[in-house]
Length: 111
Image (cartoon, rainbow, N blue to C red; front, top):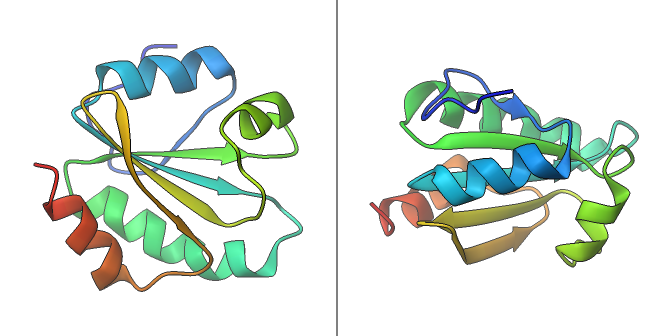
């Protein structure tokens, strides 16, 4: 699967390879680690979708139950966790439900 430079909706990563490709090739990438059973993840989902629609940031989603090894390797200990990448490097990490304005402010620092 080829990862688009930008997407109007979040990209659901199906493999560690897709995740790695997106992070390596995207200028700015926001990764949302979530789980179907996680109530706070469901609360954050509309915000993540809005950011994907309204910005040029590639927004990716990682289901920690489907990609357990990736989540472990990235040090994800709780969900939801948001990872921010700029030019292939992690630049910020937030844990828990976040306000849209806070997420956008962080993304604006890494243009």
